Image 1: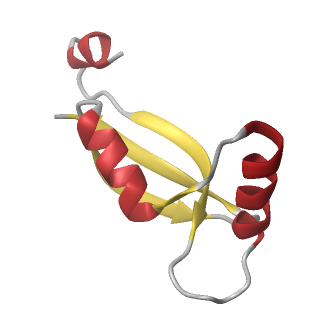
Image 2 (image 1 turned 180 degrees about the vertical axis):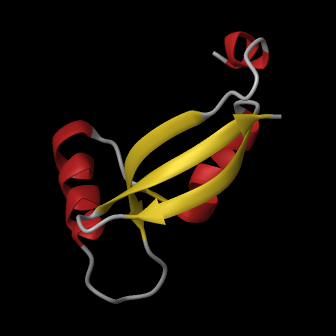
Length: 79
């Protein structure tokens, strides 16, 4: 994916994801985090975890845009 995106200028990777906020305030992504754990052994990620995952995959997170729902739009570019 990164190799293909490096050949296109300007290239962007767009993700629509539930991002778990820091702290103990209620948020729908915390419920989906528990559902993913119970049903599939997975989990939702925090903003920092997404930044690290993208960096490990050769991307740099440029912006996170909250939406009216519990998901956010994450933009990343190849490093």
